[in-house]
Each structure stands twice: as C-alpha cells, then as structure tokens.
Length: 451
Image (cartoon, rainbow, N blue to C red; front, side, top):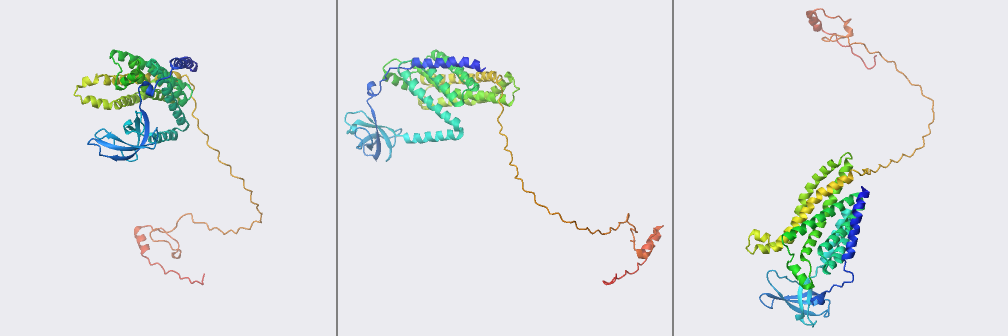
C-alpha cells in the first residue's frame, strides 16, 4: 500500500512543481503605484486636536506627521461628521493619503485609515502562544505551515494572476503546493497523511469541475465592485470567472484539510482499537463519525460565506426586491455557487477519504500503544544484623492447674451449698417447693487473720 500511494502521489507532486514553474511570471515586473495611476502615498500621523468649527457635518482634525517629506509638521484636515464617518480622539494614530506636489500644504492630504499594526501584532502573538501551549512541537509545525501557506499565496498565486495567467490553473497549482506543504509538515510523512492528501486532491478536483460547470450554466461573470476596480487598474484582460473559481478552491481548501485529516485519524484509531475489523466495518464506523462531522462543517462553510456577504445582503434587502430576485442577482448568485459547490466537495470528501483510509489501514500492521513500564521500586538497603548475646535460660516457675468440673452441679431452683449435705434431686413438685422453703443456715464468717 505504501508503494501504491507513492506511485499515486509522487507524479501529482511533480506535476504541481512543474505547473508552478510554468505559471510563475519569471522576468515580469508588475507595475504598481503611480505606474498604474495610483498617485496616493501613505503617510503616518498622530491626531493632536479635534475641533467642530468647520461646519454642521464637518470636523477639523489637527494631525502631526511622523514620516514623509514633511515629517514633524502639523496640519489641519477637514473630515466628514455623521453616520458611518469615523470619529477621532486625541492620540489616535492615523494614515494620511498624500496626492499632491506640495508636502507642506494641507490640501495635499486626506485621512484614509487608522494605524492598527500594534493591535494586530498582539493578537498574532496571543494566537501563536495558544497554538504552542496546546500543540507544543506539532503546534510549532502548524505555525510554520501557516506561514508557508501565506508565502505561496503572496509570492506565487497573486503575481501569477496579476501577470495574466489563468486564475483557475493558478489556484489549482497553488492549492496543491499548500496542501503538500501543510499536511506533510504538520502531520509527518506517513501512510495516514498520504491518504488524507489523496482524499483532498480528489475533492479539490470535484470542486473545480462543478464550479466551472455551474458558473457557465448560471452565466456568472465574476464582475463585482472589487473585481471591476482590479480590471480597471490593470488595464489588461483577466478571466474574472476564473478568478471567482480560484477563490472558491482556495476558500474550500482549509476546510477540506480538516475533514480529510479527521477522517483518516478516526479510521486509524478504530483499527488500532480493534485490529479484527474488516474493510467494510472500518468504512461503516468511519462513515458514522463523518456524518456527524459533515453537518457541522457544511454549516461552518455556509456561515463563513454568509458573514462575508452580510453587508451586501443588507444593502440588497433595502432595494424592495423579491427574495427570488435577490438570490438570482450577480453578487448573491456567485456566493451561492461558491457555497454549494464547496459544500458538495466537503460532503464527497468524507466517503472518499474514509474508503481510502479503510483500504490502507486494513493492510497496515497495528502499532502497539506505547505503555511505559513502571519504575522498579528501590530495594531497601540491607541493615547489619544485630549481635545477639546468648544468656542462660532462667527456670520457668509452673503453677499447678486446678481441673475444672466437667459439669455444673446444683439445683437450678434452690441453688447448691456444700454445707447442706449431699444434693438430691426432688422427686415431686411439692417436695421441691418444701426444699426451697427451708431456711438456709447462716453463712460462716471469716476473719482476715483466719484461714
């Protein structure tokens, strides 16, 4: 089975590497900033004063620039006041947009954002500390895999798409790179991890095919506000529908990793708990676990897309359109296609990965659970035997033992006194009463000095 997995995965890994080499834009320099018409330059500043003296819906904000050509200079910039407008306080760190030719003129600047680098850095440190505290060395590997995933997105996926490559092909190759790196780095090179990788690949292929099919059937263009701005800035043609599918693949990849790794781990643990289980029994038990996992994962994916599109949903609901018109609009329909196609891929990943894991697990030797032997108790140190002095035995005085009577003698009704003479059993009840009525002689007195 290890040889079979190797023959299946090694060609796929090599194809991924070759595809990355072919799609990467070597020697292509992407124009940015002023070269594509973006003349705004960010400048950092600190709010030093706020005054409401510039109009009914206006507030005058005084800032001191901390970098740029006029660093250290203070200027006053008018800002909008009202619902939806940001509020400023003294000491706020803001970002200005400089788009003029006179650095000292206030008209050349505009407040566009807040500085939030330190807060994000603290949150990232808390996240890393939580992962390391719980996962330890495996948590460190997971953080390394997360960093490499961002490297693939920033250094391969984004430059390749901006250079005009097919976004769907770039997303497939990028997802393959992320999957191989993340799974093997986090979980190690083993048959279990290879099974999870194979199940993830099958599910990604299904998502890509279904996404391309239903995007064409639904006539989705992928042209929303952000995509339109991107095409305008680039000034070149770009496959917007492929960009939509690329986002679907990359968005579903993270949840797919969770499903496939969980299913393979469950099957392997079932096999370790009972090595007598057959392939069918392993598949049935793993599928029962997968059904519980499926309901929560599908709900997670739907809620993630709904949360991202919540402002859009609120804006469309104010238009007074019917529910059917809202659901079939361009912006909502593409989110529906993303959600449903990704959910179908997640649902299919459970039986596919479970079947593959059961096929591999039944042919694997069960590794015994390592149980540490109890430490032997330390042997007590031998103490030197005490020296004994033999002494002559003393003679033991023995006292004569008085034999006890074999039975109790006497009349149970009248009692027995040796001074009365020999005891005779009364023959009749009347004589017994007469004997009890006889007066007993006075008891003998004994002085302390007489025997």
